[in-house]
Length: 525
Image (cartoon, rainbow, N blue to C red):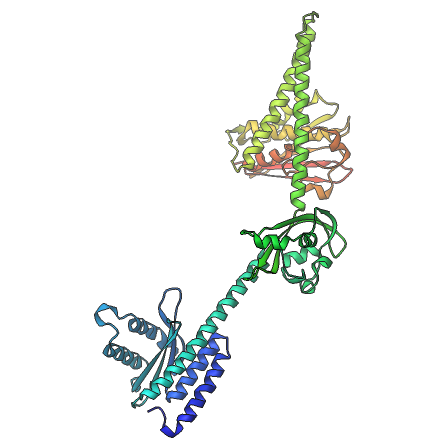
């Protein structure tokens, strides 16, 4: 017997006490420790283990133990699988169960005489198994079994609650990690539009400290300098939350404008509000995803400028070609041969200009779609290419173009057409952004590994803030000279792509008012 009959009342009181202690806990490890301790006290056991059902693979593993060496746990796990999955031949007979429990006892200590196993079951679902080993053999009465089963049922409830709490904690931590790792700002608002939770990204956007944002009204944090359309408060007044509740998908609300940061600066943001409804259909929270749209706006502005620029760049040569062609076709004028040659040369130049622009656009499109440049590799002497480009452009400009290459400048392996495009673009840029009668120098140097070509001008220079972006697609420096010159913002973008396709690098050194020098380096091998 577990206890003498005159101690039955004390046994029930003890069971009630430990049941209360166990169910008051939500930490699974602490629940298992208490269950194990209580079971050893009740049964006067020397050794005890609690095994839980792993919800991933459906197998049972030891999760808490007392009186067992840590090195014996792997073997006990193996015997647990044999105990819980006997196969068709053995089945769950009493003899099989007793034999397996005896094997487990011997694996722990051959001096253990009796094993008592209690299943932990909740809502007909097996949660685990509690096994107590004693050093002596004694009879267990039906009353004892009833008491033990009551304890096991209460222990199962405590284990189930602790597991559910652990699942909730894990899900909470997972959501916290998702929110905090998001590059977008995240706000969770209560139904009164006060901030319940936020992340580091929004704190950086708003200029507030993260801990200072909690419980603040949303209107005190998101203050608009400019707003496109109604804000969340206006939408709430118009019944947006109720309409969202009625919608199967839950309608979202998008708001865009310029937010005044806490430091007084302005930041362009777009906010998507999504309602979170309770089971009764009432609004519980609002999830706000806040995105910095500064880059998007700049991209849209660049695209608009590009479209306008390309439109102008295409119209100009087309208009010139059409004008001269229409003039030469007039039947009422007998044109002199030399004048015809002159006009035809202009038509040819403008056609070449148009073809070059189209080629640049196609090349940029290929690069944007992640297609590698096709290079036709041959031996190329960059000093010769530079001399040809200088001679061709020298006759078309008021600038002086000087060459500065050493006599033994080596050839490299590369695509002659593409590399000529690099030199032409750099020289053309220098001409565009330099005053008339100034000097443009193109030269080079070399080492055992690389050759370097530079183009130096005496123009107004490039602001330091702009130097990191001049190689971007469609980007043009915003100054008075740039506004007076033609271009689609593709030249330096393509130059960089061609140089990098040859395994090289390009850079620029400049000071405002002291000109700019572009360098590109390509491996000799």
